[in-house]
Length: 308
Image (cartoon, rainbow, N blue to C red):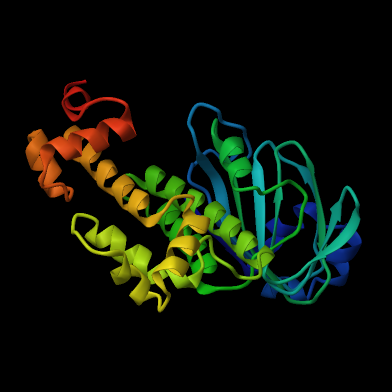
């Protein structure tokens, strides 16, 4: 079921408003929009904790307010807000705080959700989710409850929500799986944004390694000297080796070997290729040398891995 509340249907927003605020804002009520997507026809499903599946979207949407609005409630699922415009005054354990555009906040199940809009025009995206693995996913993304996090404004973050809305609205084949994938993407992109902004915009690997790392992943089966990689980054071989080892935890030769053995494992699991054929495919023309490297990495011989 797909629901959009506009103009005359906006009275549903008054469920959590102070009556005095509603009376003062009767004229502007017509211009506020709450766009909501409910995956299930039973509205009771939109606020429940469901541990029967790993992830589940209870509802999601976008809100644009031009009226004084106050929410004070508790829910049984996770509730995420992502600010696009205006300001919200949120009540946190440490006191009242202001939620600005480019910031997000997450409320855990069965916690108090209290906020009011501070500006005449306020807009934000939101979603409610649950599931047996929802808490684990949220913790892995380091998204605490009742904490304002700066994630910035961008088409990618906004677009993730729109893709989710589309799945909830159209309900095409495998829409539940696609919706869950978008949920994971939303949370992980927020987690990355928090990390990048907290680290001054630095990625996991510095820019000096990006070109050579991408090249290694595409050409791991080829034989090449170290200076091929260091030249890509305009570094000396010694400087490149030191920088690479610092950021990846292993020297370039071991990293390359790891890529090759990972690919060998994939081929053993998904094809009927022989050990010598897999060795050749992964950049080892000598099957005996390949077997020694494989056993060192995996603890068993290629033949034993293939058959077990």
